[in-house]
Length: 566
Image (tube, rainbow, N blue to C red):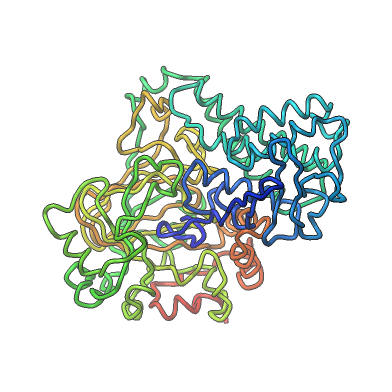
């Protein structure tokens, strides 16, 4: 489930805008605060220049009050002037220039510092690392003390080094064995080291806290992967049969699985499960391709497709499949899915589109099964939901996918649980517990992954041979529960129609709040902060005890949290 809409698809880039303006004085970088979002998985921009732009914008905004900032970078040896920064940043990130009233470098080589700034601003991050490192070494400023540098230059150099190492780590693939894993680990360790110097040298900043937490999480996963590779680069995968190992997922009949047992055996223990015989007689079980065409065929929808080259860079490795920047009528997609030629891993699919947007009349008859009917997001009054992320109006969502199509391996964001009800066709699910994430070649704090579990390349990704998960084939009339923070990947064995939702319950509330607060640090994504605040205000307190069995709920009752005590 990727931001800015915490759905599992259809989200736009959070990279923000950035432009360069050449002047006689040098280079000015224009960045917005939202640029910070991309680097840590808060959008769908691709690696390379967009990543560097995001990092540059994030650092430019790091110690200020937000908004647009102009950061001047010295040109090649000439005099330069920085554009005026907001008051909170004035004197911290402004460019140095003779006569501008700002501080000038001390013993540090001003020309070398200027070259480092320009390399960083122009996305030449390997060169920027080399230049900044040399400037800091000559000035004796490699640690928290500024040495012979002006404090502002010292702070900016370490912050820029933190972002450059971060981008280099993001661009570096982990494929290829232990050496590749160790290389990425080293880049992340260097990034964290420089961010910590910036933390010690500068004023406190929510955005800096976000960078520190996010890079530390990536580094933790990278170190776990390196440790696993060092322990058993070959032997364990041979014992397991050369490939990811999957146990059959539990299958439970709703008539024999009580609500209390579901919470105790599966939700509390973080174990996925397939439930059969759900909500008998619920109208959604009749939502076939012809039915959807008759009721909703004129709705315009965006299509997605798997982009294998985007694994680890775009959430669920999905890209746009419809007309450039546009949508297609739903009936056009439904007919394509029903045709014999619509198949294959990269075939276009309707992926996670909100029913409220597509066909709101269908919601009147939708029944939420008892197991998923307690959603703390619904305790927030409807009048206060507009700015939330996850946005309750995004759920439930509709999937219509052709045979053979699939998404990439991913984790739904914001610490939410997830369920999907399959109305037609067959889907193969592969789900891993969170502790296996390091063996799956994670990116962006373990929300995205380089590996493809349905087409594993053990030469490129040998750790996959040591990974263990659970597998199930979902059929019509069945539902799957996926616990929070569980990596999963899905392949459609036949043409499928499904509805799904993410939700927050009492057992997962504390984890969700922690994730929301991490995502909201720095203010780049205010919807997450709003959601955390709303849950703290309206939801039952964690540990206050689970509500009783809510029973299957019609949509109107579910949406007003009818399970809540009066």
